[in-house]
Length: 494
Image (cartoon, rainbow, N blue to C red; front, side, top):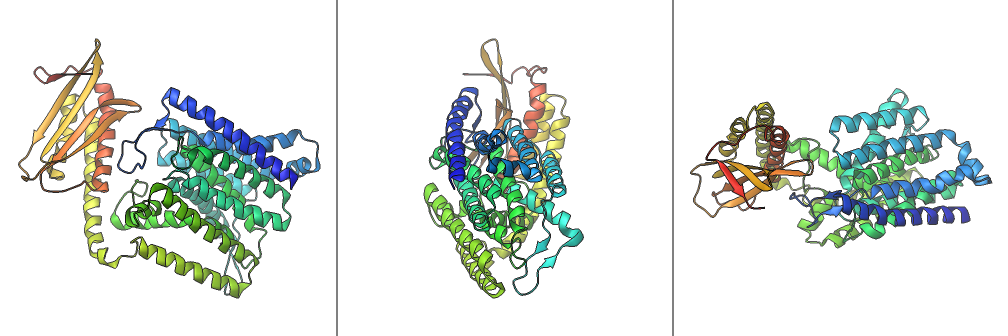
């Protein structure tokens, strides 16, 4: 136990110190998460890249074991496949997350790296080989072991990434998963697994000191994907030492919240015709705040309580027989059903509107694809405006304006394109979407409606953000070459 405590404290201190350093550097270098979207719950820019401290905190005491001549160090080095899998896979996933935080990584790149790492883990012995059946013998996967293993690893990585929506939530969820694995490993006398979980627990708590609401730093994709990777890999090793009646059920319960939230997001986006990887404000933590009128901190604490319930269920499954396991799963199923009803996920009164929303979103996605393609083909700023103009009619906009600006001779000059339509007479609802290339603002896309609406749907906002991204991508190069049309140059105050 002394070794576990030392590992925990070393990891904690490294994460604490490095979080402070990363936070100050992120502020100095502008590596912050901007509060420029309706799905953001923070009101001002917050430093990101805190995941670097989590990664370093986890690896610091483990690396020290390579230079310590002790029984524990020898045992750790003896598990070569486990060490190689966690070190090389973890660094690859952390590097992917860091690149995504700094430059932005598309879905293709993310999945390519994640599946490559997952295949490597499978070859090193990290595998799902049995599916639990509380009512009978466990089911051997056989040839299906590979796809199940890949889906588990990639799924948990992205589930932790999706759950990272409130201050302290992803770290807290991961901590409960770590606690479950630590207790199970301690009961079985698995020293190496206990060391790994002690190191990760210290890294998480060291970061949570600065990440709990109100957060002064975010972990970013570097931290969330790394946590998901370690938990997915360790859970596979833990499940292989479980009785066949509970194989894979224990890690499923231990990570119940992020897995449930991910499945709900997939079903929701599929039914509504939204892109599978689009962002929204319909996650469990968002609905807790909106439907149950909970504060940011209260919503996180409620979800901590739910994670504790999942943890107790996971531990119970490990020690229960088949009949008791079935009873535990039924009880947990009832809790989940009540929660889903409370949060409005099972509201049958909205079923009729789902079909219409799906048709509308499919049309909206087609429009975005067409406009984005036209914007990227534009050879001049007027052509870029012509590509954007169909938004006015398609979204029934009263007024549409594209304002682009750049610095020249110490002044901010700009060009403005606008169009107006007679569409309603109510007080206008105005929306501004920033046209931004990287961290450089190029202007705005301004829209206003006078049809009495009080807000713009998240689907429409997402469509506008995608169009604005396409406009920014092309405008960045066009503005450096094109001359503004006479009579349409507007001098803007800095």
